[in-house]
Length: 401
Image (cartoon, rainbow, N blue to C red; front, top):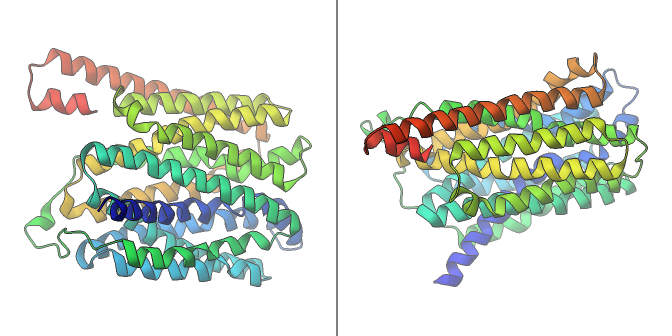
């Protein structure tokens, strides 16, 4: 029984790793791609869009997936997404037209929108209480460690040629049979009836959705802009670029793995405050750095901050959403997550036309610091309200925040 549950957990973790791989694997190859397609109008922007257009499609298709899995179940849609992931992800290896590559990346986004929504929902379905809290942290840590492996491998393969990192996406075909053998359809309502269809989550969920989008808009400066920043300070090897981004993922894994212990001591709001503070410190280091080593320090700090905030968001949403609409609401969370990733280069592009990369990172650090202070004030106000009230529902609700 224990072995069976262990295999189930491992399969969930492997599926989860495909999410981060979908976006950052080809990051070290971006400068080479920009050079390859330099004859195409707006090549620099289009190449960055290759990295982020999957996020737009994930944002569009995640809520659709959420509704479908609430009604029809999880696994068949998951299996379809894994096949689609391999076909569309590896297409960049065979294609030579930047616009055709963009189309294949859009299809990749559809597959990830399915798989990520399903795997987060399955975690909420399979686990409860402290077991869920621990596994949510382990899941994000595993995704980060997978990111280290894939970004490192992507950097090595990019030194051979920009096309080779696309072959890494075939990994999903190895995970497909495991998902068929070890995952089971959870014992939840598969068809939402009229009465339960009226279930609604608390209003604070929209704060979590919006915060998730902002978090990714800022953090995605790292995989999109750091390759170009490192080139500007003299770091030429794609493998070193990959190693720098992998450092952020490694330290994200460390804080994610420790999430359960962090959450046992701090509230949801205070964890967000600390996470943004770490990220602000990291972005300041990037802004003032002229050496590869200082950029690595910045990656460590940024990774620590992001690593505690991702499971914090997932855990809070799982806690407050009624099971009958779990897929739908987690689909929305996935939408805001990847909408932030897609919007990041679009929103930053006009800023970069006026400011240098170092100034852009300093400006982002200022925003991060303001958000950190805002969450701290929110936490202190809720804590003060909880202590001033007599024990009851409101006090308990404030304590969980």
